[in-house]
Each structure stands twice: as C-alpha cells, then as structure tokens.
Length: 92
Image (cartoon, helix red, strand yellow):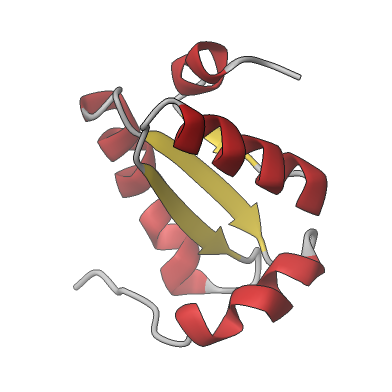
C-alpha cells in the first residue's frame, strides 16, 4: 500500500474497501494530516458536480489528504457513516 506522501501526490485518492479506508485514516492520523472525504455516487448529479471542485481543492491544499468514496462500491462505509452524509452540498 502506498505511503501517505504517495497518496497525497495522487491528489484525490479513491477508497476501494473498508481496509483501505482504515489504512488511509490511520496513516493520516499518525502523521497529523487532515482528511477531507467526498462521499459520491454515479447516480447522484450534485455529487458528480462536486468532483471537479474537490479535485481543485486537492490541488490547492496538498497538505490535506482528499479521499473519494463511492457509496455504491464501498457500501459498508455508507452504512457506517450515513448519519454524517445525510445532507449534500450543492452548487448553484
């Protein structure tokens, strides 16, 4: 698995599993690195609209780890964190 510096160079890192989620959060915590997570879904238009902005933020704030979680691909995370993602930011 990639180290924290390699993950941050990737700009937005896609979370593929609960294990990778735990690893990313653990490594970020050990290095005092803030983490921002974008919970997304291919069918959610507001979520897809955020992708470009999320990538731009990752480019501008390289000391932060930006994670992308597809709620349909990593369902365990969406069920664990659903109460945190009930509201979706939107762009006018």
